[in-house]
Length: 448
Ligand code: ADP
Image 1 (cartoon, rainbow, N blue to C red):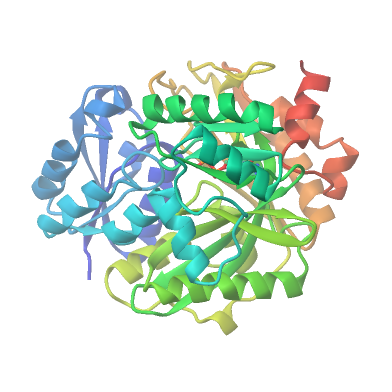
Image 2 (cartoon, rainbow, N blue to C red; image 1 turned 180 degrees about the vertical axis):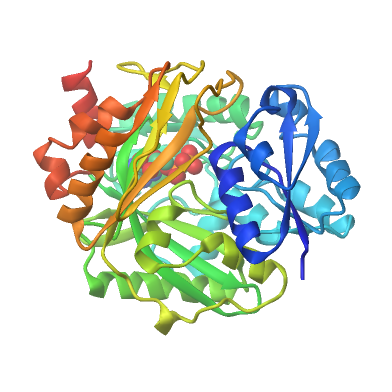
């Protein structure tokens, strides 16, 4: 059994992991940059070690600094949270070489899923439905045009090594293919150092639906339903919910079983998310994330499980604490991401929080590392908290979200709170009638 875990992250997710450790009786070690000496995760953890200066490349992404901190503190395992080193296969390999347990999947699984062509090929073989497209990489404009003609326009050219919505270009017609192909390739080269691209049919009005899976690394796996994360800005999720407003129980158990069987088939260990586009009743795989997601709390709320606790259990070699038939979906949960950003342009605006009050009451959860007087440093992501609500059904969750937003006070900085106040009076939000383009259009019409 682990008695000490190092958390290689910061902010709300580091605090989230400290909480799971404390409930399990495991000591936690926070690491931090000099800019985060006063951060909440540092205050809450049992121990804290400074690992470098403010830039992430010299602290939260510094493998030697993190491995040394682990050795100095005597922690047996590292939880990576999300972002930073969470999907870095060579980091995982280095931990293995140092006999430190990585709380997550194997380096090999991270590597496969980090390469989108390999991921798609693996999933296709495991029986997961994929977006129609090229078989593997596409090398020339001529090949791109031939494939475009075969699958039919519009198509999207995507970087194999892509992430964060970069390296993707749309070609509506054959005439647009040459420039889409060449731009995607050069963007892929400059962003990811790998210019390989592939082609997919472009779905015009899909929803983003992702399935939460969990494996014990020994061939047992379950699914925990889906999340609808269609409300996005620049391919970044803004608001998420579980269950998906248009997913029926029958669809859930069918796609859920396909996903659970797929990860069982590769002996996947830990939490994973299989992302799909969903259009006209059909699911199309786009990618798999081999880590805990920002939006994992909505799943926890409707299934009543602690996913971080389960991650720690399976990393220790224990079985999951549930089997599929134990998992019962209960009610509806919604999460909104509170960012330190100024509307309408979403410009990051770090600064000092002069007053902070978190909402409470039945069915309200706040995952945040904010406190009164905290100064948000300018070096990191602008996510400062997540407000999650749970209700017996979607209308109750929406009403609770509105009520909780009204209680939430974050003074001294600009935040995305007013965006959610406005969205909650939109008919389409209330009825669940949106696709992945809905929010961009709404922002243009209302804040543009
Ligand atoms: P990334 O890893 O960069 O986030 P994804 O493959 O997950 O890339 O795609 C990000 C987003 O881009 C999706 O959520 C969706 O909004 C859009 N997208 C990706 N592939 C397609 C497609 N074939 N058709 C339409 N939209 C797509």
